[in-house]
Length: 147
Image (cartoon, rainbow, N blue to C red; front, side):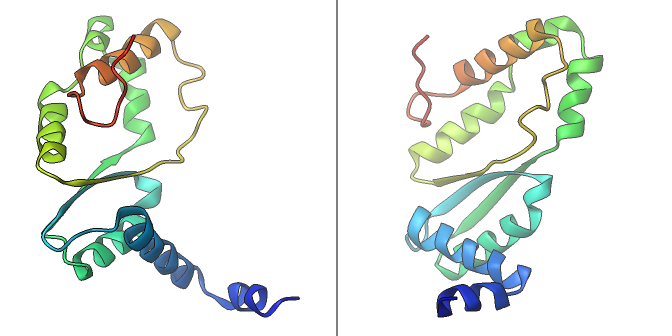
């Protein structure tokens, strides 16, 4: 076995998270001193998000804002919200995110939630929600607005 593979096996879970966070900040983000970071993550990714936050501040970030998502609360909307609620998104949130990006904030999304989360939900609700979220994002937010 190669020496690097042996070292990898000897690392603890916490050390591996810290290494991943360091790579995310240094290679993926390349934060500049004074730059803000807007991060989104699922509740499953809290330990990694915390490590990335630490590395971002150590790199000089002026502010790290993390927005968390929760699969269970997302499902509750599909199961209990009125049908009409799927025709709009939280415009105030997307406006704020757009303003952050326009002012130079870095963006990091930690994804990897349950890909089958909405597979048993009404497609008539799922489709409009996804379209509405994309349409609510301001131009320049890293999303193609083409239909």
